[in-house]
Length: 144
Image 1: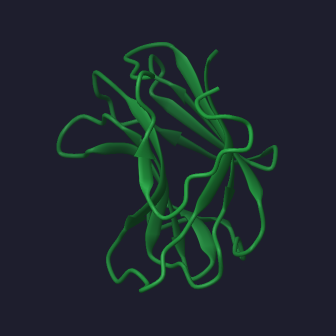
Image 2: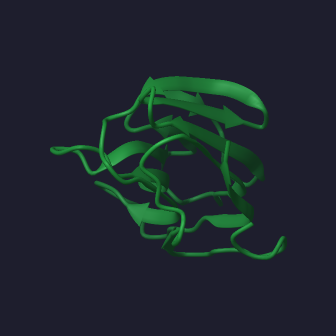
């Protein structure tokens, strides 16, 4: 586990240090919370894609909906409730799976790269809201 079981990260983005990886299957698991009013922000990323991309995965919140990049919508109405997020990255197969509260919401192709890392928190996107916040607890990075 990265932080203590009751730790939270608020109003920032946090690159999980010491868990860079270039092969194998890795999983990010955490409980997230996005309050009402936070919009046009990235809340979770997998870094390390091959150029011209910087990320292999971005999960964003736009007007209350959790989205993969700018679409599709994975969960409408995500505001003001805790949700469990699991992102499984199979580097060798270049595949990603996103689970919300135990339900598979997305399977996507990776974007290559030689070294990857997970990041969570809030990161402004185009036309972001004045107020931005996300909370995270029980963060784990697991090698499968």
